[in-house]
Length: 443
Picture 1: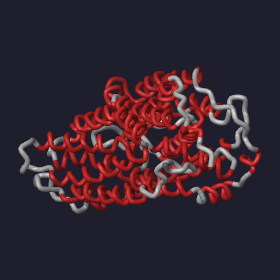
Picture 2 (picture 1 turned 60 degrees about the vertical axis):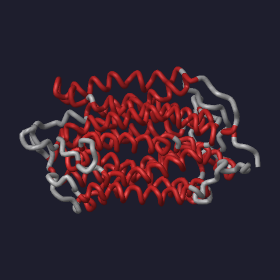
Picture 3 (picture 1 turned 135 degrees about the horizontal axis):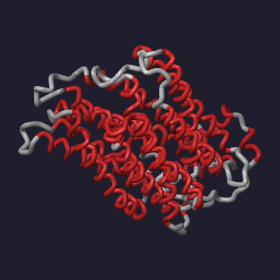
């Protein structure tokens, strides 16, 4: 069988990686603000502001919005695969959705009434649906663009590293929302971020170009259900997706457990979580060049599998944090977070490169390019896994004891053991993925 174009040796200029990553930076910053502050804005703690929506109905509304957006994402991915335009299939949707995304982001912080009201909840639901729709129209084509920009395996690994680094930097930028809110309120904060993100959304269009290729007429005509059924015949896709269910869940567990590690095990205040988060981000950023170098030298299969194994071994180390070690509890916690981030860096960086070669293999099987459908389906499953983890985590935490007991709480420590076990299961699934990539002869 012919080699995939991902195995060539050409190395495009680095400006493609840089401008592509600018969109990741902007979207991550905006997304992290919505994720971290929207609930706090509409249902603040007692004494921190006026409640704006009925708390009992807020969760149900958010669930409906999330489900609607996930289904819309799959439809967008499928339709964008069959789009015909002079700019290609992805860039037009990205161009048209950037400005509305920022506009709806601003409107999220402008409820019509100053006190608790059902109308505020209706307003929030409508604006959030529009915001999520614009976000999906931008991000589904954006993620599907990676295989079009990076044709070689080496370039795909490099581009994944740049994008992963921009993702982490976006979180740091999003963390600055707190001081901005304290300075000028939520609306001014939103205006500042929207103004800063606008050029990041549109400057990349000066550089990014889709690869010219004929789009088969059948791409747009194949029903969605038939396209999904044919994807099940792509064995590397099935293996990577099944493995992804586990490492997606681990990523969510690590992010969700961090405040509990800080308060329940290290006996600090929730505000101190920032000091634990930054070392993890820095550790990941420092590892990405090394991960890229190792992937190009040893192959991304070995590096990804090694990262999963390392993470599975480090996660249970949460049990070791305690007064029996000759370091303060905060120092032990920061070390664990940093080492875990380093071990996990290959898992966070390399999946886009695997996804690109899976799409190439699908083209060999079907004669069609369906990046949009593949990446949107991965996004849908990611959201479902995140929701499942969010439901399971409180059950683990029920095993906890008082924060005054340095040997507990048991529930928080169980997350490390449970996460390590899940990562091992994901690794056992991943080892069935072809070492040389799908559609290639192993040497």
